Length: 287
Image (cartoon, rainbow, N blue to C red; front, side):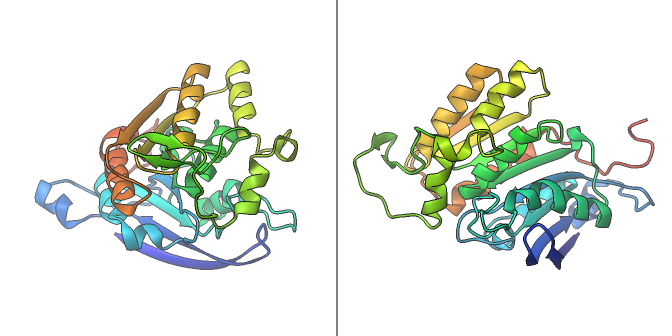
């Protein structure tokens, strides 16, 4: 396996940034199972773009989860960018955080690494703030993503508070919660006048995708019943399902906004939920 830390100058962000890339290879488990893995020119891999949450960076998943082991088992490449505390949203000062993950990052990684660019081989996921970015990316570009995984959250929207105190599945809308990092930007994403007609109007775009007959990504949601993002998650899944999206929702008893949930969700998604080939894509495989 190869774990690569890359630093480069991003035009969209206007600064240096990091991205962590995992590429699968022949492993000890492959040898035990008698699997054949060949290194040949033109081999490619299915790819998961994995977005971190607030206060995090591109190293979070490698540090706090078993993503490397899960992805290597499935022969899945994983691209983990640094999104800072941007909510994966283009800033008014010119830093294009959404433009970066939607356009520049796939272009650069597709040129540098053996990634399949086919829709059926491309997925996106994220936790907390990253769930907003993952859902936005899949909805704005449904032609590029076969599925999206939202862990502890969904895209922000007007009329649905992003943070609600939750105790065993019961909501207390009056309870005061700590002000999250990036709260001013989050408030803007919940302001109809700010998002209208932009890529941030995710739910309007989601409905339009259905009306226009566009290919719809499969949407997976997993959240704890003690998570402050439970309300937003439930509302998003309900509406998207009713509009015509294929969704899967799992609410985990006794769990909150925590890494144990996110690690277990990655394991489930990679081993059971995502439509994975579980092998490299060799030249001629799709002919």
